[in-house]
Length: 589
Image 1 (spheres, rainbow, N blue to C red):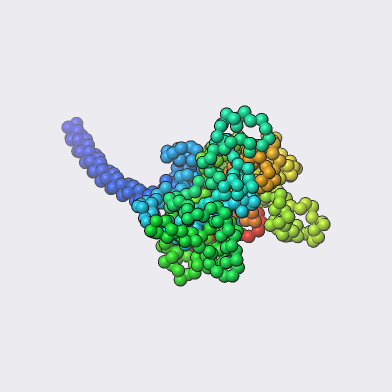
Image 2: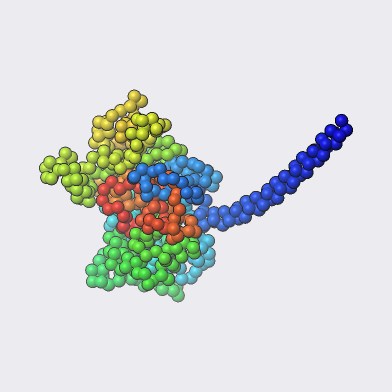
């Protein structure tokens, strides 16, 4: 009995010894793990400084590629919190005002809020920051639609930063514009001096109501000009210069470009300093870029200028080093586009954000879950830019003569084929289940015809549309409007400013919903498609950019235009080109 007890006691000692060793080992492991975590946290903090609250992290493990043929080139980045992409950025709730979600075409958590820490003119009162100025005069280009005007703004911003100039916007005063109440983008309630008078107005033309004298005119009624571009500079008075004086110089620029001369520059005295000012309209911006600036940007011998330029556009030092190693034109433009999107170059005025938010919330579209989007541009484009694409499409379908074409447009089913990637054979054999209804937002200037095309597709018992024989889809359109026009420039300057403003809000809402979708189907023929593509690009924060890439599973983001075997400098959210060019031109072109 005693011997047995002794053996039991010895055994317990061994057990206790083993437990002690395990505890010590666990403690050491825990300590090492804590040190590792703390070290990782310090690294993460450094990375977070450069990523500016962006919630994207690449998966590091190689996984088997199970994607379909259409998705094989897809590279996916998953959220840190495993959130599905939605219109509203859930992580932004931690940081700021909900209205900020509607101020830009990019999710606010993906914007770079630290640029001002890196730019010298943001740190001190640099006396020479306003010596060189490019002035954009948007009035003449105002006859064009939203996309064209936004692209001219982006192109001017790209040129100004490359040339080391501050960029200012000079809107026409009321006497120099054909638009009642001062802007091609209409007039919100905020523009009127007496809000009560506006609310009680029963007439057909709001131009008879008194406006606030200091309310922004022209393009500034739509966009809030970034200090990244303006550097805080003011429009030079330049002695007795008036708007007409600047307009005369703008008109004369065309002759300079046709004769191979640089743009005309005006020297303005500002105390003991001389300010050199170049005024350009939207058309002149394109001429100047094509003839003189684009060749400089693509000149591989100008690495130093490229480095300084990309820093001015918001890159950090590492990103600038990556950029100057790029040699392919498509790589350069995609990198610049992604950087401009992250820098928040396009930012809407507070009243635009407020009214766009109100409009979008009327759409039968959940803003906290994922959705896809299709842009079907017809209207005026059918007789101009899209005409050759329509002809090419019907020729590919076996129709030789224009008179034989079933329609004068590309049918909606063509967009659906690009969007759909369901393997219905697996579905019907029981290997794949249809879990939820897919939501697809459709933006079009021809909703009646598109809805008729959708009505002809098979329907499920719950009223959804069946696509590809097995996928349940709910198509969503913006609320109908009493105004039959879809384009802001329809009707010219005779349209009531408040009617024009409501068109403006509807268009910006469409643009925002399209840009923030999971998968987008559209094209580059329209300016709309090019603006959307720019804002769906995102820089790759990996330190391995340019190195051989890892396989990353999923289909959320695609490579943009980069080499197949290297880690790309930028990604693009799933963008499927319905027709036209597959590679986007320079940002703003």
